[in-house]
Structures are given as structure tokens and as C-alpha cells.
Length: 363
Image (cartoon, rainbow, N blue to C red; front, side, top):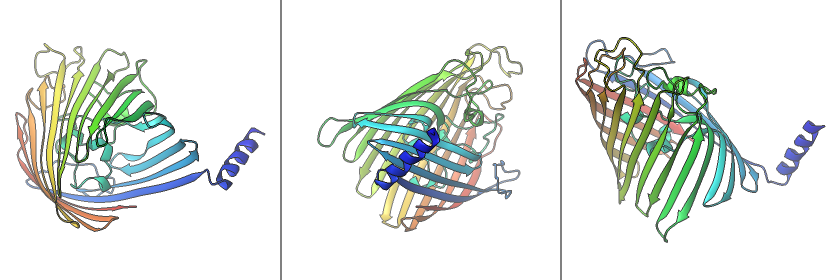
């Protein structure tokens, strides 16, 4: 009987045009060439060295009265994953709630992590995952924060108008938090079940004008089963537009506790934590509406004790300089290409030249 009534309500809502479904999707294929002997490997589920892909499909169902449900599935180097699955209630412009599997609002780039929404073939180093050189635990162990940043929990968000051209957006959330073993493990962090009893929390605020925006993000929690190892992340971001030129910059940092009882550290354990700092500055110049030139400088630096498996030194740093072009055939199809120079200090890796070519389709 209950199922019958639920079905009847859904049909009634659909017949009354209260039930509206919107679909959007994207697909990207990316090939990278790395110079020199024994180039660093990158994961490729296609089985072709240097070739990766990402496919995403999103559905948003508007039930009515400010209630909606969103589901998004994607596939790539991380396999098949549901990275959004939440219900949302929009009460007022300044107060709304969503709950379920969320993309957390941490950082400016994380909000536009889909390949259709950024101009370079690769992500900035603070958000780098499988496309980063020396990404394993023996190297720099990925960036600062995953993109997308996926977690289960509840988020409250809204906007406040401060003047005709300036508004303040805010978001606050409680989620299960990142997990790992003597450092954050992004793949395990996307598991659905929590590993400890302490939730993580965080938030983001953005002050937006007509051609500019300034944002700040933070989050923190414990990441081990015993609730003894903490992480704390923060970031600042800036957006400016001058006609056809857009400037973006972000700085992010993560302080992560290490297990002082673990064995294999290459240095004496005095402070059982490390600090990883990442940044990028990027200029996008729309030479013509169909062609954009991109200049980007980004980097990562590790301060403090490296994990036992790592071969880097306490102050290791990786820098990357990028020149890219993005050509838009139409609104739904783009071609991206770039040249990247990678240099490293205080780590047993050599400088590398890298070239990428990517194709992106969206609808």
C-alpha cells in the first residue's frame, strides 16, 4: 500500500508539471607526453600509457516548493564513482540545506573541477591527483585537497546582498571527514563508511563584486580510526576580470599529524606533523571568443617530517610553469593543449618537460 501511494504521488506531481528533470554531462580525453628516460607513470584505466579519460553524467530533479534531488556519477582514473547524491531544500536566498553525498565547497577551483569549466588540460597542483608527476607516497603524495572533494554529510548555505553589486555567499558543513594511514589517502576518503566517531567540519565565505571575488575556505577533523591524528586545511582565493583577461590565484595549506609510533622515518621525530602548501596564479586571455591563451605558475612545498615511505627531504618543493591554448569549436566542444616545465628541489627527481593534448565535450 505504501509503495502504491508513493507511486501515485510521483505520477501526480509529474502530471502537474511539478516534477522537472535536468540532465547535463561531459567527457574528456587527455594524452600527456613526459620527456626523459623512465618517465613517471600515471594511472590509465584505458591501458594506454599517458592516455586518460573522464566521463560524468548529472541529473537534477526539481520536485517543487524548493525541493530537489541531485545525482552525479563519474568515471576516470579513480574508477566509477557517485560523487553527488543529495537532497536539497531551498528555504530562502540566505538559508538553504542539502544533505547526502556532497561536493564540498573548499577552494575556488574545486567549484569548477569539471573539465568543461576550466581552460587548461591539467588541474592546478594543489588539486592534482593522478595527473601529477611523482604522485605516490614515495614522492609528494598528491596535492592539498582532492578535486572533486567528495564526502557524506549536511551543508547549510546562502547568499546575502550587501549592496547592488556586492554579495556575500557562505557555506558551513558537517561531514564524515578525510581518512588515511599516517597521511591522507584520497581514494579511501571516498569510501561511504566512516572510520571513526568524530565528524569533520568546515565552511567557505566568498565576497563577490561585478568583476571580482575574494574567498576563504577551511576544514578539519581526525583521519585515523582512533581519533588521534588531526588534519586542518585552509585556503584563500582571488578572481579578477579586466575585459577579455581573467586572473585567478589561490593559496592552500594542509597541516597533517603523523603517527609518532610508526617505524621507518628517515629523520628524528621531533614534531610529529608536516605542513604542505600549494598555490597557483593563472591568467586567461580570450584573444578571440574561440581562442584563449593561458599562462599559469603553480607549486607545492612540503615542510616538516616526510612519511616513512617518502624519498623527499623535509623542505622539498615542486614547481610547474605552463603555457596553454584552448580552442572552442562551439559551446559544447573544446580542444586544449599545453607545455609544462616541472622542476624539483630537495627530492631525487629530475626536471621534466611535459606536453598535453585534450578534447572536452559537454552538454
